Amino acid sequence: MTDFKNLQSIWNQQGDSKTAVNSGDIIQKSEAHFKKIKSNQRWIILILSITLIVLLIYFGWVLTHQIDTLFLGLSLMVGMLFFRVVLEVFSIYKLRSIRPINTLNTYTEQLKSYYQWRKYIHFLLTPVIYISYTVGFILLLPTFNLHFSRGFYLYCLISGFLFLILMALIIIRSIRKELKQITHLNSIME
Image (cartoon, rainbow, N blue to C red; front, side, top):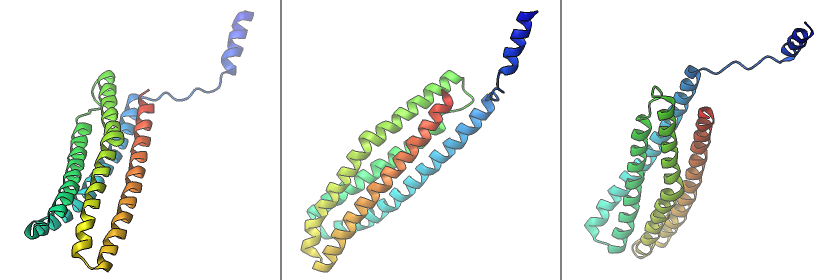
């Protein structure tokens, strides 16, 4: 009887255990985070697309004036923006294909594959795209200096580099935010 009392005593000393998380809660949380990630990607696509449209309009003007260095710089800038928009659209479709109703193993593997894809974009492709875009802008500067007034050239120079710095800060902030969401989703799945 003493053993039973000891067992009862040990049992009673246990603290209240945490409520077990059920699969419905996990699915709800992951879907909410997926919506945040998709929303962020849509904003990125919108901002990049607007910039791309402005550059394409300017590109059309350059073609009529046949300025070679300007053509090369704008081609590089437009090409890099277009490539980034395509990557983001592809990422949205890749994320959309992940279904929480799959088996846990399949779902986890798809999430890990998606995370690796986004890390590849953030740590390899984004720097290449950003540097190429910057090189394209720098290629524009000699033509701007030649064809524009000194004041407008300085405006383009200063505002262009401020834009590049601001864009770098936005990209870094966006990447950190997405990586934090991905880490959170990853912790839910473990």
